[in-house]
Image 1 (tube, rainbow, N blue to C red):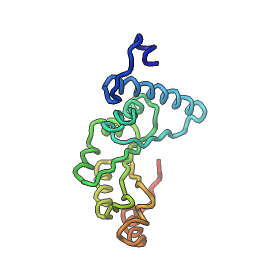
Image 2: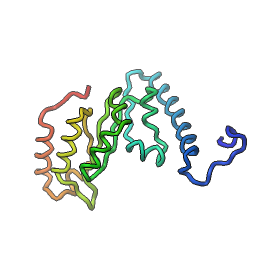
Image 3: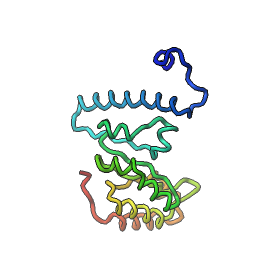
Image 4: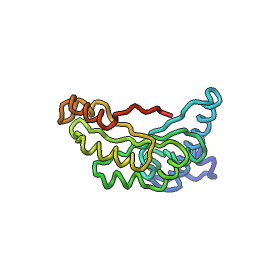
Length: 175
């Protein structure tokens, strides 16, 4: 396909070459446009939600150009995976221009890493990140992943459950 569109030019050897990344990402962008239109044709009120990494990583690594998807109206919401253990780095991701642009048009929630099997996340760290998300007016949080909230933490599940309940004492409507 690349050679056909570019008069026999071969794709570069490096998968990270800028034009090669852009060309492939644009193919996925076209697919997302068709996919979104098809879904909306069948169910116009369907919410199309994606959960990508931050754009500076997701575009070159996975060809996920979610800002273009948002700008073109292909998606209805984003749950951005901001899995950072340092609060300073976490906040920097929340304050990126592309995140703010998306947040001004569609709901953007933030995915918070609640721990890994061999590396639990403390409830104080989770609490600090939830607070930063709230202070910036995001549409909510999502925790990755379920087992790390309860099974692999240093605190007993009942303690963490109480802590989570205190973070979210009042039920909130999704919309």
